[in-house]
Length: 380
Image 1 (tube, helix red, strand yellow):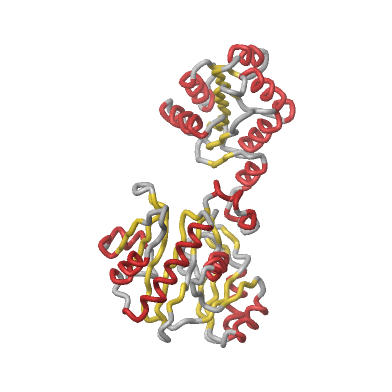
Image 2 (image 1 turned 90 degrees about the vertical axis):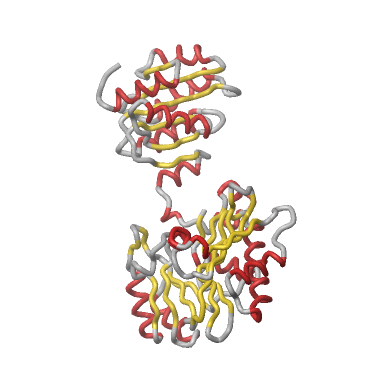
């Protein structure tokens, strides 16, 4: 789950990471008042969960409160990469002497969080990594002992930070690590961390991504979720405990198990088709959950056929078949459906489905090939 800049900054502030003075607003007249309180010269920043806000005109430097109001009026009426701007952050304008990139991210290769830092802050870090990888410093953090002071000093030296700022920098980096760790984040990023002309270190921008699997530990974060950035089908899927991701193909997939779902998508592609989605219904396949999954798949107008692939381990295949038939009584399905059942009571499950308009298969390869044929307008 991605957090907005203003949400990330609130968290940073709790962990003693200094941020500019600022407030969030959704009203242009209020923005003028905020600008007056902050001294007149402010930065107006659109709050949408996409990159390139500045290039799209979603970030403006206002010289006075009247200009701040005008910019706020313009920005609140914008869409950036298809997302509406509903809120703007009004920050004090800061005179910048240097810009630094600083982030903590999970690294699968080292199986640990790593600190990434660069003296080339304020720009796309991917561009720096591609053109000048030597400018990026990476230090792995042992998760059992956490970030150490000597590591923070090594980074300060590596980005050529003046020694008089080391103490504050180490404090900021420790705060960034704490918010990363305690929030179950996969990314905590400051780009840029600026050394201002009045010699302050400030997190001018902030970005956090929270691990969805850990949200049960952070019920307060659920209130921060921005549904504008999520597809309606994904929101609906979450209500029923379904894992759903929309793709660009024509074969809708309903599978019990993430690994089996990935294998199903691979076999579909090997058979000459393209999956329309990833959908893991998880353990159990009652009528309510299957019906919800069917509605979600059918909400995609590109879907021409549905492939249901169920491995019956703890869940019995005959129970799954009854759930599918009950779901078909709730949801009108006008496109072909292929069902592959394997595992406990698979034969009984296939017999239950045999009297319906559903096509059954005994192997995944057979099911995928059948789905591809039907998606292309053929018959079995």
